[in-house]
Length: 115
Length: 117
Image (cartoon, rainbow over all chains, first blue to last red; front, side, top):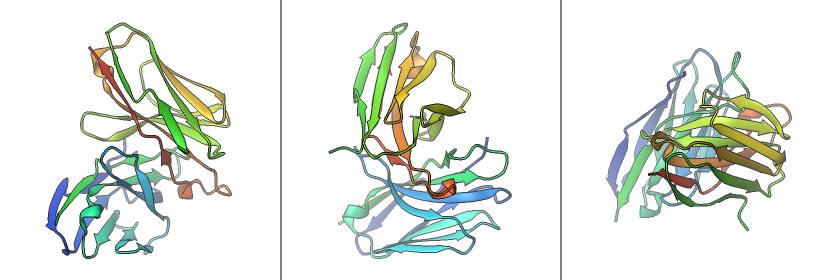
């Protein structure tokens, strides 16, 4: 069983604040890392696919970085808006010795942006 | 036009019953999955099928049996339901991408909340 940890578990910020949270994963056998955004009463939706050490991805005000050597990824939201309120999940895919398509999910960071 | 659709959305049943959850995807994806959201909110893989062939079969009780009649459908049948089976079950699909499966983002259904009384 591989541990994928996300911190913090929950976060409350004011509209306009910038924020970040972390996904930690085993550094020894990396293959890929995904970030998903999960709004209440909806399905998780893919935000980023990260595969190379040093990857930086950006979509609007949301960006992510990846450090495979130390086993973490950061998700940043600049100027948070109420519509950013959601749970952000990371999903880690290990490499050798594991089935392809097998993702290990963190428990998510629940973000609440107050107007 | 829902990409991954699961039915039913809610299912309340008695212990000992047998029930099924159906999943269909209209994305033309090759791979489908069942995930269970546990009590700590983790999404845990249960099964994965690629072109109707079982490729991931996690340690789940053999009361759980997936069935994939074609690559667009993956159903989950549960026999002799127990209280601990109460959870939200998510179906998902993905498309193989030139052999690099790390890029295969998951498209999820809306989830099926199973409550066993």
